[in-house]
Image (cartoon, rainbow, N blue to C red):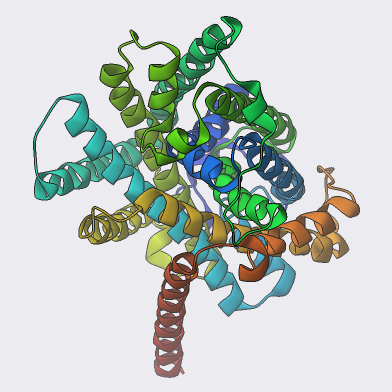
Length: 469
């Protein structure tokens, strides 16, 4: 199953069964920007205040812990993606390790839902920021229509081709990165002027019903949403040139850059703005800049920067979800129409359309309750689903050590996968993570839906086999 040599030109244009294969267009630069752009986005722009509300001024600590957990799990992903450079990601690894179709389907469905749910929330945020940025006084119905139209635009870009998608990702990543750099630079100006209060940076302020340890766990579970995204890149393995060589360097570089930015942003935020004011703000980074430089036109600029940030999150998450379903369709775990590739553009058109339809339904559902804490609830649910998947991926590394690859690949060692499995499971369990019940309810409904779909697929195939016999 491992790739032992570069594909020939014929293999690049035709996969198994006569279907064209995916086009290899991503080199080191595009892959690095893909990883950075996928990690940066909605989480840091919206959740800094929520994290500070859990632990007080030491908001940087949960981000640092989340970065460490992500880095450990990334090592497991790197061993697997360099050993099996195929598009299906975590679902493929779990299937190879355990061989249980039901478990494979649930992993696939959990990862897919995490991407689509994040993209749906980002689409709603895009529409709301567009209305604020242009000063539009519109109701919920118009915001919903804008969000749906934006998702159709993402569909068009995705169908156009991964080359175009990742080039747009370069532009969007540059814009969202510039927004975070503005926050850091203006905060440093304020800090160097002697106006900041660094005593808040090491102060823990937790709810009366939570110990410091539980509060840090809760905040880390929430902050982890800002670190997810690195795992999406493994679903682009078939469209990456020489993945065994490129992936480790670009993964570590991307995680290091984003982790440093997150810690700097969180330290600056609590040094500039009192924790209570920061946690109460729906736009915490805008509050930071307004406090540090009242004359800076952030109220006019930030909505547009936020639009680019959440647009990038939506585009990359939909790329990930469609490639994941394409990979599982190609493996025969999901219906074969999901593996259909456009003969001209060589993009997985069946999976792209299918995931977009689900996203449109989710956007509509989310918009029915516009006053609900969409970002924190869906962000927490996203991290919950992915941390459960990460637990299985870390275990899969150990199981698949029995299967030797024909060529050299990255090794995560013996200790890191064990530590990764334990820490990810710790952040999943309700009594240790401190998560609100709503996150488990949403995750439970999604997994139940996945189970229903798997049973329907199994029954359809059983009937086909009976007719063939």
